[in-house]
Image (cartoon, rainbow, N blue to C red; front, side, top):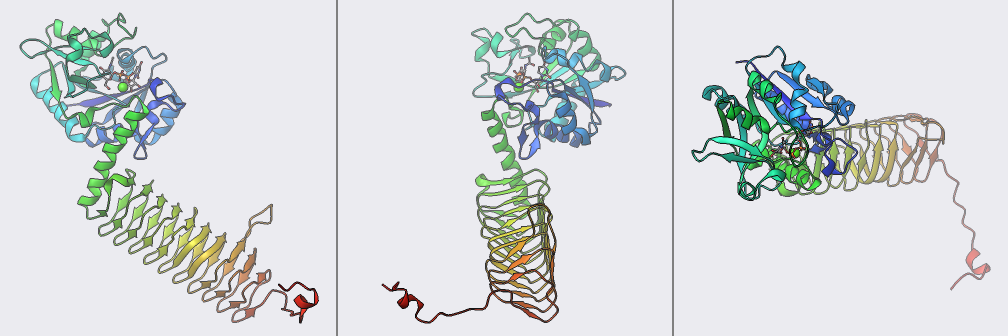
Length: 456
Ligand code: UD1
Ligand code: CA
């Protein structure tokens, strides 16, 4: 059976108090509308139409890689009006259309499939995905007849004192027979508390015209919507636990899943141990056997096997296996750190490569540099890569020993097997095998303190 889906995503989301359209607020690093699209795709729904309006261009841009179609809702006149705007998309389609909203990101593939099956096998004109909840406040209520059959949906603001007590809520996710849906949408009005054209009114219209209407309850954990920042944080928390549980199933140790923040697209191999307060973002990939001690943020980076990282920030970079990073290191974009390297405390690396087995143990800045393997950086080395106008490159060969408090004024080249005396400011090429000393010779002025009378 042919299936397609519509996602309502044109609303403004007033309650978010944001300049970003609501459906672009993120859950675990992914825009809510993209979370919904990805889940629908997993259920093998090919044609997806996103109804856009508020911030239409932003929503289009954020979803541009998802291969979806778009319908425009010029004015946000309500969810029913939004579906009417998909007329073009539905024109030549027959059979079933599913409806989702871009502000309910917790729906799972299994429930989408269940909804489809239930609808198609039961011969329904419409099936509503519902949940039984303790506190239904804010949601549309499912009103059933005495025999238990669904009669209608009543919005919270339109509920009578009896209806408001009902605790089965409308998730705003549905399956409809396309023809029945379009015919009844022509008949909805906006005589209600919010003056909007409600999609929910279609249910009663179908029912009263003798069509079969049903409801399929699933856990509220999958249907709760996001209208406010508080609800956004609640959705994020549920999603975070789902992601974390998946990693633990795959053999990753999370010391405290409540305080471990892993985005959707992060990949982690088994036997990696992650301590609390780590934030793993973007397309980060962590290989096996790593230990992430507390307090790091790693964004869009590749960390190879058996790496130890503590309290550091790593952005758009690659860390080779057996390397240790931190505490308090800052690896900035386009850095490539080799294998068995030591990047120690208060070390900043920017757009540089560091060869295998090189040690940069403390208080050092390396920017726009190519560093060989087996080097040792003394404490407080600075690559002086910027003259106030332009950035320049420094090249350091293999097995170089850079003394403490050295300045390497770029552009400059230090060849293999060299020594640089502590405190040097290097401005010229250092040849292979040389010791470079670039500082004033020490002078001791005998009894100077006593002669000046400065002794205590
Ligand atoms: C809606 C349902 C309610 C349900 C709840 C579940 C209606 C009338 N109410 O209420 O029964 O319990 O969802 O979360 O359908 N949108 C548009 N165009 C519009 C208005 C809204 O595209 O003109 C989109 C929004 O972007 C949003 C979705 O539709 O993604 C739902 O709109 P929202 O205003 O959040 O509806 P609720 O009040 O939550
Ligand atoms: Ca909503």
